[in-house]
Length: 173
Image (cartoon, rainbow, N blue to C red; front, side):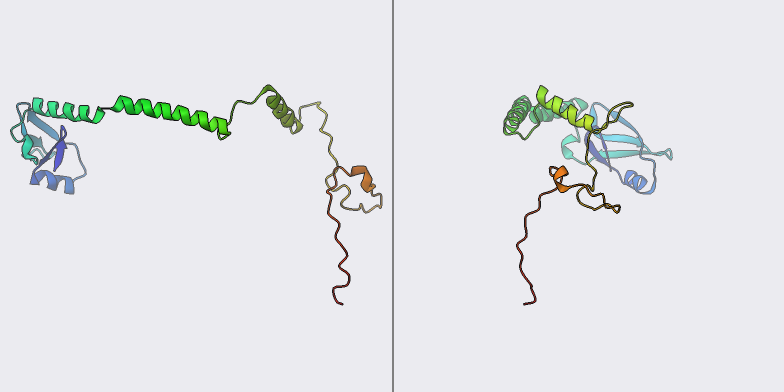
């Protein structure tokens, strides 16, 4: 079984060839006045006549096929411009509504860009640039071994504020 010019053809020899051989390219000869059958040259040199599976094409010409294909295409494309326009309009409305709801990112303002740039430059080091001032990571958390602990009030803005735990007393009572 094979298909040529959108018309399915069948012949037992062609089916056997496709089942048993890897070569899928066959030479096909057809006459434009009658497309109900075609002549197929198998790679072994044998010519085979393949008949159309659909009786509608048995006595048809290529012009009949071209007209049927054009009619199918016109039927398929009918209303396509309206469908395409609707899709474009719906996408535009969706983007506008989503942008209003904050679902899509809007262009940042000049102040937002400046804040982003400043935040970015906190983590970038250029030759000769001053490091961003930060406290020691374990400052006010771990007492140094040499006993030179800094006072907790010196870094109160960095130290996390823990809630006071009420004394539950002795739990073994």
